Length: 264
Length: 329
Image (cartoon, rainbow over the protein chains, first blue to last red):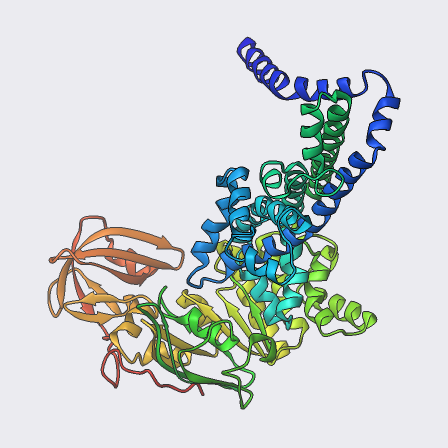
């Protein structure tokens, strides 16, 4: 009994000290001098634009990675074609690589002297230091989550239900929409929440390829970093609070949906 | 009704089907019987379109369907592990095929009610599959397959995952259902008793080939090969020849007997008594006696007795293992 209490205290203490206390402190620091300075910071053009950019990038990257992620998972599990073992490994690459490496890779590929960057530039398309680069970096780092959540569930449900649907006259699309998708919906939900959290918080790769131009290519994470370095503590904490609040919302929504799903 | 001609199917190095041809008449109930790995399930899946044959043709109702997907074959398929749509209720499962066909709502409701009554699941329409027993799930699977009024009903080891009693009940029930609906039906099973009991015709398969096709009685009385003889019903080997256990006579004296053996075990099965014996070579065999015969002999464990086969069971016609072509009448 006392051993169990000790274990519980140790775990809670560890998590509290390492996670809850620092994050809680961010919230406290933010509202230390009331709401007015926070509001003033957040309504400034740069902060508002950074928030807008982060939300926009997330709003594009998450649906895209959800669709591509489900397609990848189907390809990995259902079609035993040569090359899909490679897909399975490639999908994990963003998890294994440091975001800075991802940023550099994109830089060398799309930069003016890069493999395709020069050609694109010649055709008037600018990737680096603009929206496409931030989007590419965010998509890259947040790709694996939906795939990793959906693959084991697809494996577990097997092909029998899909075969049954086919014998009952359902087309491939009907089978996917009526049988496969409902079976994997909680895995997709979970994957979407993780993808959202990752896309909101991406810093390393974006900081390399975006150029971090104030009011133009500066995402909220970059804004927090610049404010902090410029001794604008109110700005840094306000930005951080917004970021944390968005991510926590995603996680809470996910666990709420999951609990609702499990009670069925 | 169903014609399979010269079908070959390989999975890598494994030959699942080798030059298989069968013919199934309209309104019949045919069993595909064989040990595991004999190709019976693969043959069923080829007929359903769930597996593509490497060569050969499949025709249903006189139409060549070899190149058609399962959706366009007019079949109903029942899976061994039910393949229930877990996120749908029983009624939604049964209605699935009708919804895909965009039938009017009122018609779907009426048809589902009718089918649930047929499979005796009336009160369970709003349950989810997880809330049903195995037998109930399989009856739901049958109702779902029958909903689309298939030309052909295909069942892949439908009772294989159920316990012995439920299995026996459902088997008898399936036979009655077939006698009412007369849907051309093929059932895959590895259980010879199940095949003999339920089917009009049995296709016995072995190692991807058809070993023999015939009525249960034909297979039992006129087996085409030693494999058929030993697979259909029990057999005992008396002095190097096959005999059915009820044709093995036990004598207490050696005169006119074929072989000497020792009683190892006596099993009382009500009216019948099964005597398990070991011969001089250490080979095990059984003799089936009536209770009166057994009492008269006063057998006990360890007794040495003499055996005689009243009648031998021999394969007839054709060389063993032959018979990749056959016709179900």
